[in-house]
Image (cartoon, helix red, strand yellow):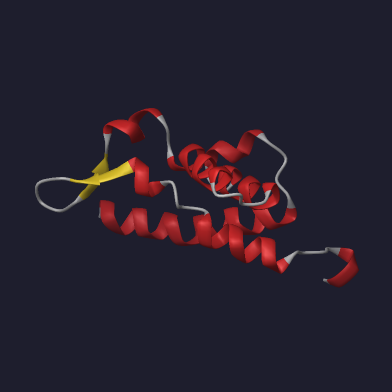
Length: 103
């Protein structure tokens, strides 16, 4: 949409790639090699641990904002345009997958 709705594609793509990086800390493999929420993940979901990892690596704050705001926790803050796009793209894939796994 050009000037009417400016989108920083570098920030958008970086945030989309890194949005779930915190899942590396949230989940562990059980004895059947199934990913389950680990003890760390029971206290801190992946948006929080993902932001911590990203900040420690020097990721810019506008990308960290996407990591923090892409999931339900982000409903409490005003999302940037890029974070809004990633949030909705994430849920477009997450919800159908969740429904299939519960069937």
